[in-house]
Image (cartoon, rainbow, N blue to C red):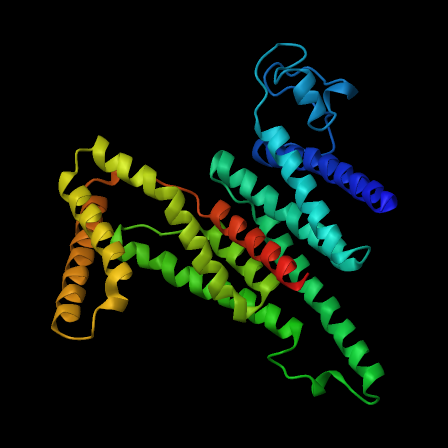
Length: 333
């Protein structure tokens, strides 16, 4: 047990250090600088940091969240990403152990954190990160396919790759998942032209979806995208309501609140209602309230584009990806 705890502590420290490096990747991707040169410096005063300024988490605590030179506040982003990376890496190591799966999952997790970081900070997703995510995920599927064939060949002499169902093949599923991610997101993105005269999602979100499809396969992609949408709605809802109040758009607010309240009540009591006249009437009312709400929202987006609030979708997609990875580890464990 003592050895296991020591190993986990060592893995946690590795994760914290890599998290510190991911902070550099995020900031220098946005600034256009190399991730190697120059050495770490304060983004405010530009002074080169000492080695004790770069200790993950501890430096932030000892420096009280301020630069050791100019005393300007250091972004809370640094310790959050370091701690998050450390926890994720440790959990993945606990599940996969000393295997290539751990290495692949660490690389994929690091890319996801970078993608979410740049999207949150500047609402930008870089192709080099998304294409890397797609490539590593497909390469991971190649490895799983080879290993599956090798395993089956030893259990069943004469077993070859064509013997495996092409839809159950991890590589085929990964490639189809990447294509499905592009197709699904582009369809919904272009529907935005009909609603608000612009794309509903950025091209970067399409590539993130492709990476998700390459990682999970075509059969799990839909669930992960739906979960992403749910997370996005939960994040956006308070901002949306606050915007309606600030803009004094009372018609849309009343319509939306009425729809939300009636929808909750309908869900709570529908099992107690027999499918008859009352059920049909309630369904029609719900549909009318929902339709009216959509009309008010779309009309507002078209007539008052300055009231649009853009919330990046990438972080919600990354959150859903980590949620599914964690759920799968817990269920399998």
